[in-house]
Image (cartoon, rainbow, N blue to C red; front, side, top):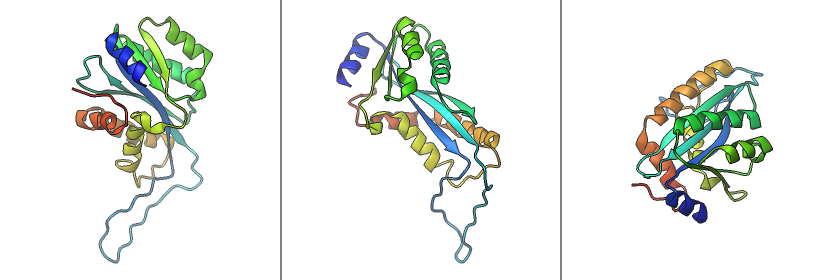
Amino acid sequence: MAPGQKGASRLKAALVFIDESGFLMAPHLRRSWAPRGMTPVLFQRGRAWGKVSAIAALVVPPQRNRVSCVFRLHPNATIDAGLVLGFLRQLARHLGDTAFFVIWDRWQPHRATRVRTFLARLPGANSHLLPAYAPELNPVEYLWDYLKINPLANLAPDDAEALAVLTRGHARSVQRCSTLLRSFIEHSPLSLRLK
């Protein structure tokens, strides 16, 4: 990681951490409080196979003074190289003329030929792969953990569209919380200092 970070600093480039995840119809169960003698009951729709696939990026600008979050949700879809490419196009428009380093894991769609070709043709874009079996190095993993364990815990929506609406609402509230986004970067074992 150190050579990529030094290169990004030298080139005054943004660091973009990207990761994907999925949210299922079955709730992520967490312990909750209830009055004594009234066991909480969670009703869930049976045989519900809907899901929401998500892709997100935490963007640290060249000044290293803040962190922003960009995400996309895909109800009842599986993330493939085409969806990753679409997200990268959206991200490139979001960043404008800023050079950036994409830092992500070694998942096959990240290494797809058309994704690598797109990044190679994009001026100012570079790609770096994280070491294998090291999800703790990607701060976006902490975003997924936060969403699943905190606001979306114990929720059992009726369908994938309702799950997408709930997920989008909570992800947007995280987008607006700069201290929480900074904590994802600071909690990772990366040697990246924010101002």
